[in-house]
Amino acid sequence: MSPDTLAPEGPAMCRPRPGAALDSLVGNTPLVRLPRLGAVRPGVEILAKLEGRNPGGSVKDRAALAILKDAEARGLLGPGKSVLDASSGNTGIALALLGAARGLPVTVCIPANANEERRRTLLALGATVVLTDAQEGSDGAIREARRLVAESPGKYYYADQYSNPATWRAHYESTGPEILRQIGGAITHFVAGLGTTGTMMGTGRYLKERLPGIVRVGVQPDSPLHGLEGLKHLATAMIPSIYDPSVVDVQETASTDESHEWTRRLAREEGLFVGVSSGANFAVARRVAESLREGLVVTIFCDNGDRYLSERFWDADLC
Ligand code: PMP
Image (cartoon, rainbow, N blue to C red; front, top):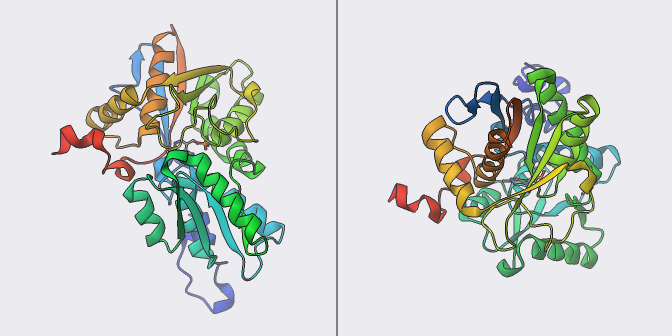
């Protein structure tokens, strides 16, 4: 256990830096076997990295922590500054959580149709929530964040997760090395959904440098109007400036329906209660695995199912 995770008992001067204990809980998530759904055939297996085990409940804790540490190191979070970003929910929650532990005010622009769990979690963590036009989705939230920064440039540190290099570096420095430590060189395919694209840009680059034969598979929704929270339909969305298409060897799509179906099955058959983008990643990981004679496919389960409990696709099961 890191000393930062222990409650301070000594004199005040021995207390850890505000936020340090929480920071030390980010990352080092488990990479698990899925004995029922992931063992596709002898010699072909899917493993999943459980990012919902991060303290903020999602993969975005890694990027948010890297963004805050980078801003701190550059002296950009002086007194009176608020951290601002646009988010479909998880980055906002991660910034709110890590910001709360540091005593930093956080403002999050989020589409008005983001589900209640996300909005209420942000408020519970003390963030200021700016609801943006539901029809404009995450791009509308980005436009509003830019407008707020332009209006009051001195007030905010704009985290800008879609353009901030810390977003992908977080994964280059943590997710990639962790996967390699956890499974060694046997991995043949890496499957990850594309939102900011940070998970794929960072983990994909790291893994390719160490395992040149690895195939990196990007997952996008199959249509502009979709229910895959956190993922972008890149052909019709604002392209994140950190996105480099050459890092994705194969582009795949997942439908909202198949993602819901795999999300349900992961809960029922593996006891893994994960979010809908995890279902999308798993749908693609299964297709990839089924096409192989031999291989080890690693994918990302981005967050937990409880962040989606109010969504209609559970209704038939839960009512
Ligand atoms: N799934 C969920 C639930 C997310 O919140 C995100 C982040 N937008 C992603 C997938 C995609 O991750 P990334 O931003 O690293 O591409």
